[in-house]
Image 1 (cartoon, rainbow over the protein chains, first blue to last red):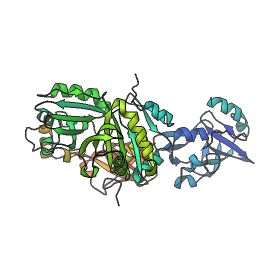
Image 2: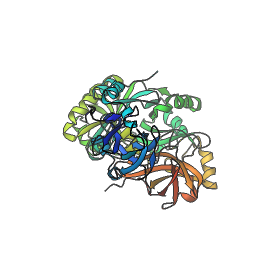
Image 3: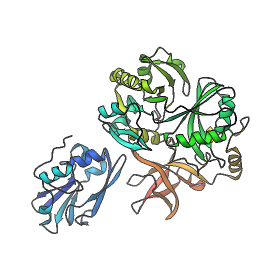
Image 4: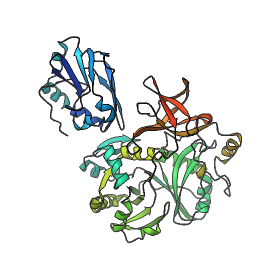
Amino acid sequence: MSDSIPQNLKYTKEHEWARVEGKTVVVGVTAHAQEALGDVVYVELPKLGATITEGKQFGVIESTKAVSDLYAPLSGKVVKVNDALTGNPSIINTDPYGAGWIVEVEPSDTEQVGKLLDAAAYAELLK
Amino acid sequence: MTRRTPLNEAHRKLGARMVDFVGWDMPVQYTSVIAEHEAVRTAVGLFDVSHMGEIEFAGPGALETVNRLISNDLARCQDGQAVYAGLLNDLGGFVDDVVAYRFSPERILICVNSSNREKDFAWMKARAEGVAPVDRGDDFAQIAVQGPNAVALVQRLTKADLSQVGTYRFTEGEVAGVKSIISRTGYTGEDGFELYCATDDAVKLWDALLEAGQPDGVKPCGLGARDSLRTEMKYALYGNDIDDAHTALEAGLGWIVKLDKAGGFIGKDALVAQKAAGVQRKLVGFELTGAGIPRHGYPLLKDGVRVGEVTSGTQGPSVKKPIGMGYVPTALATEGSTFDVEIRGRAVPAVVVKTPFLKKS
């Protein structure tokens, strides 16, 4: 598991990442987050079509020992959820920036993503 | 002040994630709770359990003294045998749950929970009639070697004939040149040993087991795996599943309570009365049939009404199901009974199942 921080993503202080893909934004948790959590055994996902709000809880991630809230990096409508996490939540451990993505969001404010931390700022936060 | 076991540095060298556990700086995991759990179920795992306390009674009358303090019966044991027992209060609730080792009628060693060490010692001092207890906790380190390959591993390191040491039996001998109490006990549901040695010898014993265990697939294991392993067996954890407010009968531990033993024991009268009146609530094991993981403290609901709470819960790595324990009214305690676990405001259905959760093939 690599702790390297992808340059093309944006980050929150709560260790979520956001990746712009055309008109939508994919959201997940960082390698640092999954490392700190330990083995992920359950993810509570929002419903398709749900509205999430920047800075507010939109789901829950549970490891063998701990329960943690997921915070929305931006506001918008959930247009995709990663159903693979229901049967196999451990992909968040093995591929946090890829197959372990959590939701895809249609932003209500396209400016919001730009205000998130960039890779350098997130790296600074981890120091 | 944080206490450290003699293996603290060894854990750090192995890259363990350390946490505070009732005042002790202990490894919660080295690599992954699930991988360590699996190592114990399929190969062998090593646990530093040196934080556990040891209290000794030595001298004429030691057995009789201890037998008044514990719910189980050392008089029915042979020398070299150990029993799981409760130290009960006058109401039949748990001061602690312990393992008592009978070296001889004149020497009994009691292994107690680290969280209760001082409390137990004070309680024993106040309640013991005859021989006085001695706190030996600082003298001993303890390493648990657990899993299907544990016996072979320990046997390669000792001249003691381990085939002669049955479950809940123990012997004394050298393991890897370290004088040890070799006890066929554990807290995982797997075969294996708990090795008690002098504090100063712990690193030597730990390193020898790790090195010799390589062909056995040995892994150092933390408190995370210890908790998931014991939960799958429905072994009680003091402070979660048993405490001073729930009796041994309510906890389903009637088998460690010998109401008919000569001389009686503290808490007996309360349990006799409770047995006659009928037990009103029981500790059950349940599986969630809906999505989620039951966690300590979550409410248990029947038709929306709170009937209890989760005392322990986890996603069982071997049973591959969300499992938990909790006290419920006796009417809800039979296998197949249903209730809900309240998880973040949602009522998630659960069903009472036969335990241990883990079924051995």
